[in-house]
Length: 563
Ligand code: AHR
Image 1 (spheres, rainbow, N blue to C red):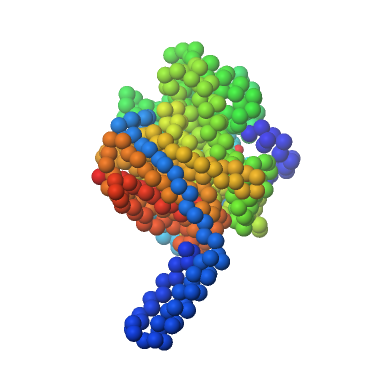
Image 2: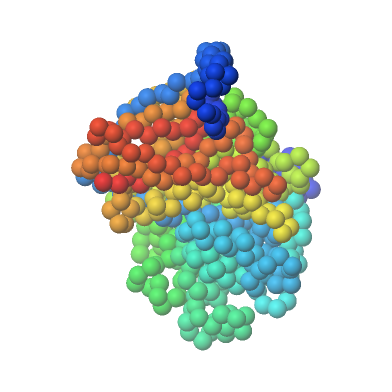
């Protein structure tokens, strides 16, 4: 991002501190009618209740209409938009995933069992690894075999990088959680040969020296590598390259870094993702233009299937918003900022359309999420932050943007999976807690590979402290079994919403699913109180042919409609 450039004060010491009631009293009042004492007590209580009801204003639900035409099918919402990102950064990999085989924390070959179980439950499609900025200083050979080379992690706190979590461990982790590999190769400080040999080590079925080394390291069969990222932010931490210089590298890496897996030659070919923009300013539009123009004129000898885009919700660099302990103004500011994702996607999609009207190249939003101030007392280079109800709303709004642009946005990776930035999971030694963002990913599982169905609705607005936001956001999709799903976010922190759903092509009699909300915009799950923000069952029945959904303030709801 452009702003990031102005915030690079610690390069000299190779240390990067970066950017980042309805008074409902359920009196179970078992009374014997007939007692005058009880009658007068009841009368007094009734008067008191009426008085209190008058004294305490109860926000009226905001009403909105929504119509969904089930017969109108849009693009497939690629499951890969629910991808994750795991960088060697802070406790993202070490402690978050890897504890080592000798750890007392229950693990399988060094990988935490609790984390694996949690990630399997959200059906993660892919994981991007090993970075981020880390990728352009990563040398894969230091992370294979019985003897690992101990190095440094100059990007992220200057700490020791033990390289105990390397290629085989990452692929084992993916196998355990059932996700596909999105490898970022080192373009900044590596060579095409180093990257080509990494892919040979991983993918060849032929008995080459590298394949034998892979077998000696415990994996005779070739691995599948579904996605290859060619560089990371090459305009910045990846080498400060100009578009032309990067293009020259892209062509070389695209040509020589081959996937040899026999199962990936005709079908399931590895998709190559080029570095793309990091914002909306002209340097980014020029970057997208240059790469896509080259793509339009590409020859047989190089290709690309995706253009990466990075966009964090930060408001301004360095990240100064607190991740917990904030109020409704900060809630509104962050959500206003996150909604800029829509314009950013449209801006770069329009440039891509110019050179690729057939939409062969995917826009891959492979770094996004809320980036806040480091938690007090944490290493600022570890990008540790809490994850609140605000993040759940933020996640839903962005996933909805991606789904609405499913024809172009076919992959996205939230940053980052565990213990870093907008994480799914937080760990502290043997403890683990699932974040509000995790639960949104869980609730959105039915949208993976579902077919987008247009929903029209009156979003309405609410204004807080001079900041105006849409009150409602929603997407609809049909899953593979033909079931219609709705995901609706009530952004308003104080007022509930009543949505009257009209369906064309379907007579819905009921709706059932889950809703996620909490008492405060900054409610969080902690190791001591892990269930503050967890989904609750949600259901509604049609009355007089009308299906009305009553949504809590600041909530995300995902429901299936039943005929
Ligand atoms: O996600 C943290 C960092 O943000 C990544 O390493 C880099 O690509 C981006 O600048």
